[in-house]
Image 1 (spheres, rainbow, N blue to C red):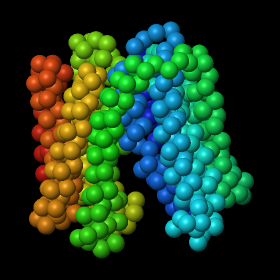
Image 2: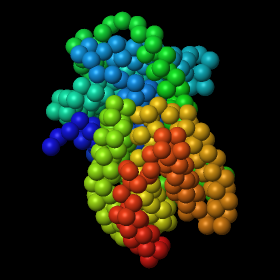
Image 3: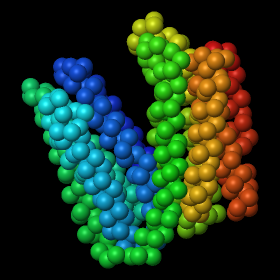
Image 4: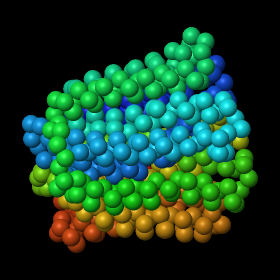
Length: 423
């Protein structure tokens, strides 16, 4: 049965697939390393300036939404997200002024100018999937995913196929965002009440602020780890680390979508939400652990085959990152967000990043590159344990009520055993 949560998971997989296929098609169509690198750097910068507030605002909407035929929540959330997008747009436009460090490269300025319009449109568009989730429209959500990422893939790659360059590809990306923005407007007209709701805005922003801070803290771990690697090793070793320091994307996407999708259920009915979390966690364990263990077994020969013998060490780092699945299938954060304990998320994120950096600086001297990966796995596990403890203390919710611990511990021991053998 296609539920709204499963539809959201499928939607996130389609999002990843579209960006992944774009990179493959760019190389096959002959865009060139310079053009691909510039395109990826633009997407990276746009994500860097947006991921934390998009995460915090959407999670806050899910926690504060109250079902109604026409909701003020959608319109007011749109206003806030549009305002944040305008700020990011302004930052991008500042990069193309005569005073910018990019001013000596007219070609790059041209691309930044075009991409800034994509940034302006795409932020509010993230509301679409959550409107469809909250209105329980799973089929429409999947159909929207096919439309959104199908048009994006076509609009971005067709200009290259027809012999045009990167600028036209970015124009295609912006056009696909404009089409999705039209879909957003249609949904707002259909489901939103266009009035300012001060009570909702206050609760929405109070919940969102610590979630935004928590997302920013957690998201900075990747960049801080990269900085540590660059300080201790040369550029070649940095590349080896970056190729290996990748969490299994299917686990990350499906787990995050599942967590976000169940926040409204928890906020409305905690007991029913815990039942769904336990059932969903079980399903993901049966899927994620065997896949991760299988990848762990073949990564040693897969990396040299896909890249070169120089990247054999990347497989060792990747195998450590696969261990993140042990913590990824635990969902205390879903319950805490649904029950509006957002500050707890922020405080624990601060502990996680501090522990991650501290252990990375220590372990890199003992274990080398894999030491930094060990620090990430340990810090993430501690984060989940702290969240479970806070949830038990604040709400009296035992971990056993939403954590299928027997199966989880069994799978975890098997995975750790396999890691010990292949390491």
